[in-house]
Amino acid sequence: MKAQNLLKVPTHVSIIMDGNGRWAKRRGLPRYEGHKEGAKALEKILTFASDLGIQWLSVFAFSTENWKRPKEEIEVIMSLLVEYINTKLDKLLEKNIRLRFMGRLNQLSDETLQSIKEGEEATKECNGMNFVITLNYSGRAEIIDAINKILKDKKESISIDEFKNYLYIPEMPEPDLLIRTSGELRISNYMLWELAYTELYFTDVLWPDFNEEEFLKALYSYQFRERRFGSV
Ligand code: IPE
Ligand code: IPE
Ligand code: MG
Image (cartoon, rainbow, N blue to C red):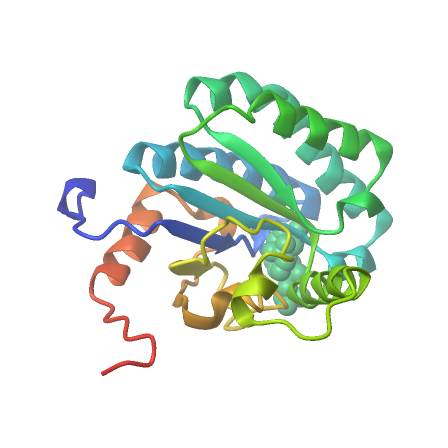
């Protein structure tokens, strides 16, 4: 499978990056080693997606439910993220990638929030690919946060199109393709509103083992999907 054989490149690809813990466990390593390796996989996919001309890449990095994990694991994930932002800014700028975050960001630590702001600010003029990291995110939280903003605006009723303006990134197109790694066949509270007509792709590959070839397999599967959006 070659990248040049792709006829339909999706505008927005989203990924539930799952399986870091199992990857580590299979090697007799602590879970955080899986997260470290997962960060490397993300690095590859980010570059590859940008080179393919994908306009939006979003990834599920930490859910509102992931706070149930051991404190040490959460700390590793958050510090990997801060490190990731701090060390990748040059590359994002070079590739003209705009970095954005979505989720209940105000509940994150000051250090994490500071990095997020720096990353967004530094890349805000980039007009190549949009790279969205969803952090302390859940689909239900996003919908409830939207409803609370609507109540604050004292609206009595709202249309579907108006509702979209209250989501975290209103201009973000809905994902065309969702990839979930590690064999789990569920959505786990991810982008519940946005995934209404998204094509789903599941693979058993664990996230740290996911690479350019696996990404192409997902895009290749997308080539043959007939999207009808309720029409005939
Ligand atoms: C995904 O990998 C990363 C996060 C949820 C932060 P997991 O940590 O969920 O890995 P498994 O599912 O336990 O293997
Ligand atoms: C979803 O994975 C969240 C992220 C990938 C960040 P989980 O591993 O948390 O989901 P469940 O618990 O298997 O549903
Ligand atoms: Mg998991």
